[in-house]
Length: 146
Image 1 (cartoon, rainbow, N blue to C red):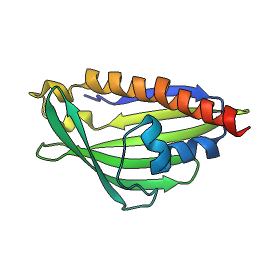
Image 2 (cartoon, helix red, strand yellow):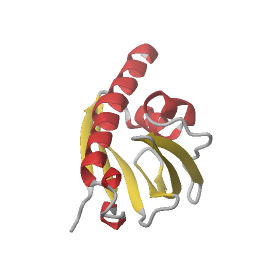
Image 3 (cartoon, rainbow, N blue to C red):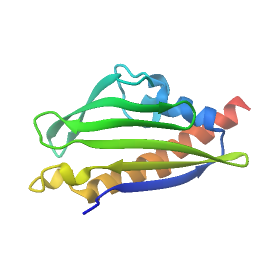
Image 4 (spheres, rainbow, N blue to C red):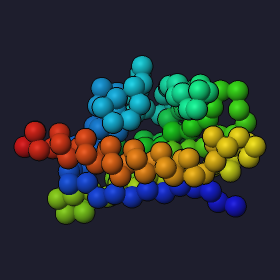
């Protein structure tokens, strides 16, 4: 059963502007997570912690694919839990805008007995992050920079 979550949003900005927002740790902390380090480089490993319902989840990630200003993929797993998934951001130019397609695949590898790791939670989280926070952040920065 494919439990992938796919979110798409059109953002009024260039792929280069959005690429910076999804790969520069200083920009990522404005809309995503506050990462100690991040580099859009194959093999780069990073981690971050998220508290959900009074439980700490340590995210362990590794960049597995980079095509500058087009696509980045990284693994996404949790310390102490079975399973490994992948997050992919794709940037698809559409005139003066860019369609951002986020795919989080491999969710079916996470333990079914942990409701925190249910597909619905990922849908809700990615919808907020992509449709709301990323879009608002990039379009605000785009207005300031132009």
